[in-house]
Image (cartoon, rainbow, N blue to C red; front, side):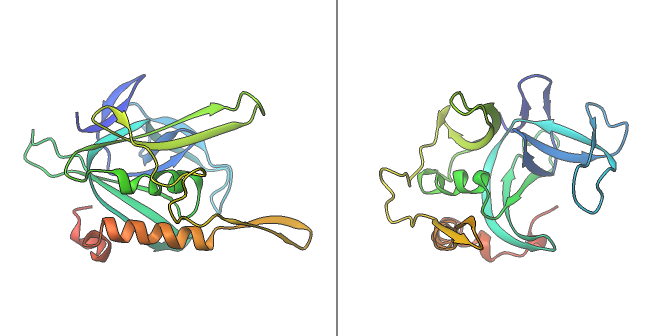
Length: 204
């Protein structure tokens, strides 16, 4: 069923969300039902107390997956139509995530295998690596109750360039330029009309 989902605390509808620590997050006013308080740990507003709503899945029609040039650099904007028709109002959710972070790459690798004529469930979560003990988070697509497989894997890259491992001033860095250029092309092809649209074309 369309909308935002939280396996622990029911469901709710929101409009602008980010991904992090295994949840989708929306900043809201203090006193909003279901909101939790959080202290910002970095950035120009470090130390500021904010209030947020969290969920771990969003379901709807995927209508756009495009790049936005923000003051913080390139970001992906993932737009879903979650309209239910119950109140006659169209509703959209926009998920923002970093241009080349793991969440973006996980989703971009799966775009080729999505059927845009069907609704999609976008799910995020977190866990701990059994071997290293490190925390990790993930984001993926489901359709018809089945996890969508990536079209590009290490075993079968299908033309996807690997990121380059470089040593700069004694530090190891990873150059994802070629990989992200390829994945940009995948998104552009999949959403050729949506990527050419202005944000004002959407009611949010």
